[in-house]
Length: 616
Image (cartoon, rainbow, N blue to C red; front, side, top):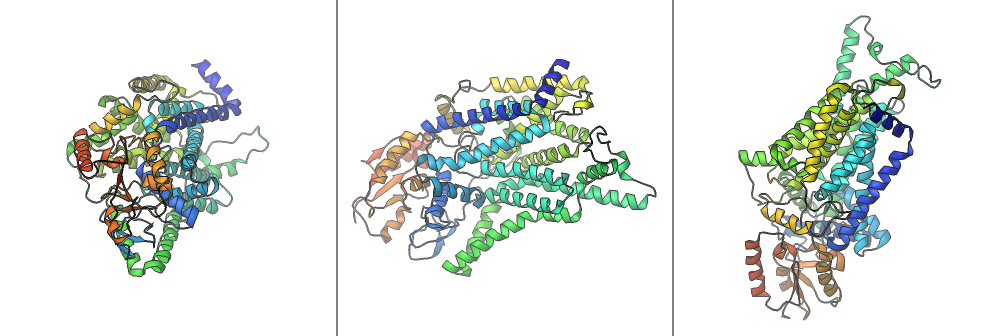
């Protein structure tokens, strides 16, 4: 144990080593994911929908989709093909479409990337990959601040052995990875604000704005950033209680119990200044709490004003109110879409609780131990780090955010989709890495070389628990098939397909993986169509991923009767109808229906069909 601690001390002194290791591991994750994209990185529908808004912003300066959802082109707003209310532009694009939990903090940066680099396939992937890189870097920084280099290495081991955590979401233009980047930034900004002595109010205001960015990237990030507000509220309450005790107890001086500064350092603060600094980090004033809380209403109000001004100018205030009401319904429906099957009962409850097995061994008793380790380990570390508010104020929002995510998903989430618990899974991985490394380190008993990885835990007993957890984690790693190569192998895709088919609740991790070659065939054909020809989609199957790549608006098939027909008009059948990721019986039935109406497709593969439409 002493040799291990000595090596850690050497790592601490070599400030460049953590940077080098983080750079190498981050580069490897990017190489691995880019290699996968090159073969299986066809753009998925939801990601394509977000990118179509980004492309419209980059090319037209308009926050509109490149998919029309309203049948009648003569009305400014109407019920769309999903039975929701939308407002359309003159060419059928949809303004601020209502079935969307992904906001401008994710979409606008992607638009900037497209403005700079264009709109070819890899440009469309660049924005999401930048967010993924930032997420990895910020996660590493948080882990290093709390548990050192070992936690970073263990975190990347999780990403290696559980590629479903990053494959799909890591390169799609969805709100999860941008949202997690903003969440981690918010945790760091809050912890930094608590340490400031000068201009503290400014730093709390900045932290609040970052929280607002997180909410405006993905609404569901609210559960993760709530950890900041719960902990900040507790710190404010502590300050109120301490202030009351100071006034009511003669001779009480709360600074007397704080640790002493390093008297050997000539730049060290005086005892009074040092104690005041520690005390400030352990409590918040009401003004600081209010400024921290101001970020969400400021960013949400600003975004809502943009809705109101633009939509009122385009369609009238009443239309704006209907659109706002529809967005509210979407939020209250968990962002899951009206009409989806809602589950309930004790089995559903426990199935959701054990979704944590996505990052643990599939045996439920192992998942239960992992949950207990995260829950109890967080409490223990918060207690032992009470004299280190810098670490405590970073760990607490992370731990509480994970707990609120879990409580919401297990207790209230209507669908049981693992994708909806992605934030909780990532926070769980980070917490588990912190707890395990802290247990392995224990207490060095040497204050001369204070390190970020000092857990404050007694060495006796904690080492054994840490090793036991590491064994369970390793068992989980060993149970994952098709992950031991440098790259993610082809064999893992049909394995994921089967898992999706067998899933009780759908939206598994990962979601639909589309081979680039299959998608490329459809894109290549549609790009060569004359401008006068139109591309239509049947029912609700919009194929938004194609619109952003061909640079054309896709229309509902029912809208064709209002439009001038062209001899080369086509209907596009998308993966949501025919992909092998759905139940085989349902897929066969849908294929039969499609083939009845399209017996001679222009193009056909496992994911797309292009059907000719008669000139009328």
